[in-house]
Length: 336
Image 1 (cartoon, rainbow, N blue to C red):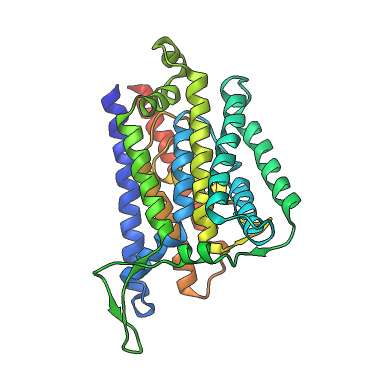
Image 2: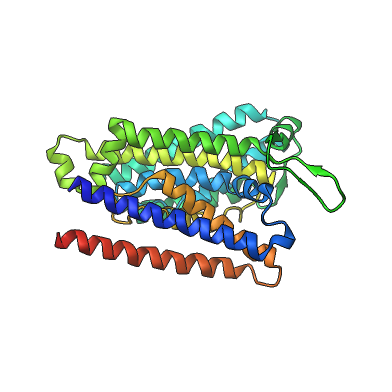
């Protein structure tokens, strides 16, 4: 039984990776004259989606338990607003605010995880309440767009970590050195940490067990409510890390910030092979799901003639495809 589950998981991952490679290669061929094939374009995918990658890693952990979290977008907005107003109006230092953001994420996760795990309230209802609370608190802090001018935070966000290969000559004959930002390093460290946690720790195996069959997990002696609580705490903590990365890109706080980001995270997890019913998935697939999401947006922007809404349509089509694919795998598994 374990072998079959791993086989379906691996197959979903392979499909996701092949899809990303095909889409990116197609973009390199079609938009070669617009520089799509430059290494920096690929690195820009990582820079632009560093925050989403952190959030998606947390979302994957929750979905492995069979749960969901639609509050992550509002938590990102709250994080960015606290960072912006805290630095510009409250006179607080950026490092202290970053620690405060992480603490708020943990507290957010404890409340939601307790409601889901111990009070057994539906995750959708709990996190919807969290979504409204997050947006409401963001508006309470400020209804204006607040730009960040803090030198420490700006310098951190603008650090360029140069890559010693993959450079190119631009049209002016200037050699362009590829680079990434600090936010990318943070996101990749999060990805590596969650991958190792899911693969090699007892808690990681517990997430799979709870999502695969909750009754069996209870019979195995697992503390299911505590596992769910820890999953939500971890997700909100990673969401707050993602909020800091997101803020490094936008350098501002806004009530409408990160609207719909929760759907991007869910879509990236599903496209990456995480089952909506739980028990199957991994963050490597989620990483490629994020990259597919970013590639679609980049292709639409590079085209220049398509409306931005086409990227949402394409993601929706892929999401439906992978949900149908998951359903087919589930039926095959049930027959066996």
